[in-house]
Amino acid sequence: MENVLLKQLMKLTEEEKSIVQQKQGVMKDIYTSQSNFVIESEKFLRKDKMITVRKHTRFIDFPKHKHNYIEINYVVNGRLQQKVGKDHISLKKGELLFLNQHMEHEIQACDREDIVVNFIIQPPFFQFIFQYLHGENKLIDFLINSLFNHTESGQYLYYKVSEVMEIQDIIGKLLKEETNNSILSESTMKLYMGLLIIELIKNTDKIQQNEGALQNQYLVIEALTYIEENYQNGTLNELADKLHQSMSSLSKNIKKATGYTFKELLQEKRLSKSKILLETTDISIKRIIEEVGYDNISYFYRIFKEKYGMTPKTFRLKLAK
Image (cartoon, rainbow, N blue to C red; front, side, top):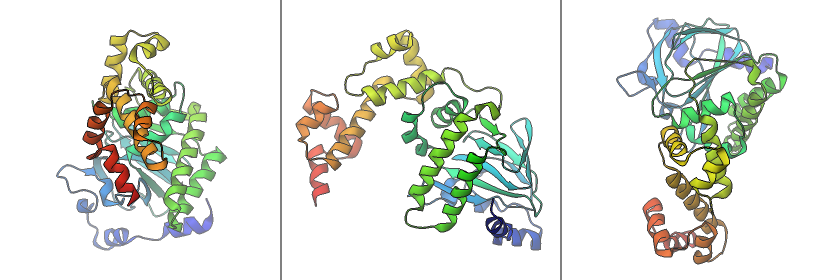
């Protein structure tokens, strides 16, 4: 990490100055509006943003808490001592820790030289990269679990990647882009985060994972990929044959992991695709309906209106204004 960036991060924030001067505890209203300690992304992330970076506050213990977003701890300098679930972890310089929304952890006070940044990421960010993630992989399992886990079990991934220069380089670029705050920063950070995920997938041998990672997530990834590629004519029966699963078993696994049935996921993809076609092409609405896999025009109009609050025709007319 460049000395200029480290020097900038070493400066005391207003919150840290207050802690040093007044020796007070964590000011929870900075982090949450809830009675229980769930740190809210809304406190740090604008509604139109999906990723931001915040320096971890030093000089004070953080009590047990969760987040309503996916968090990545990264140690720029020094170390970060914390208890994650039942596990004690000493995160060292250059190492990463992924925490899903349901993972409770508590953090020991950092000294002046301990510089840690937290990447705050809205779960929907990962939806658009799922289509590029194929095969069984612990990080993919974690991301799927983070997005669709309705049992609220905590998950973490500890990446010992301080010696992997590709990863360190991408993180450096992410941190620089956050400080640039240009009109393209959000898009650039999404790109770098996608590249980071790919590099982490290449380094699964450096993962330390907590117990209780959910099984059968490979099937869910395959189902989502299948829908992405076969939304026009895809069927649960064909997918079950492809995965050598019974339809009932596969249907239950998809519902359990995502909270949605295969039919609902397929419909969501078709509606999303039809919306894109309405926005970006001059294709007739009748042709679009056929293109996304429907042959019943009135049925499509009804579900489109339920989803977007207006008919396809009204939606397109509104775009033209």
